[in-house]
Image (tube, rainbow, N blue to C red):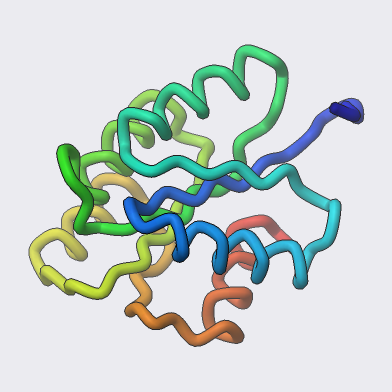
Length: 134
């Protein structure tokens, strides 16, 4: 793995592998090799990935997370990440909108946007650009 002075990563979290593949392809198409793209199938796996990346000096700048996942839901996951790593931005993508969870994640995790599934690629990439200062 090639490392630059400060490598930045975007993490996608969803319990559906096909969604992770689509998100990663969309990001790569838009940003190429500008970022390292990581995926996780649930919140616990995502937490491990983030901790490992941080330990190796990779700057995790953004998490794209589903809301409805087995175990820890996306809002709880993003709030706990925000407490541990306040510099990581987040976007929640969900097919199941829970208004209470949306309000909570925006307030307590500073989540930039909550987008519906299927997402609009332009809307998603615009949100990613804002979060990554691009």
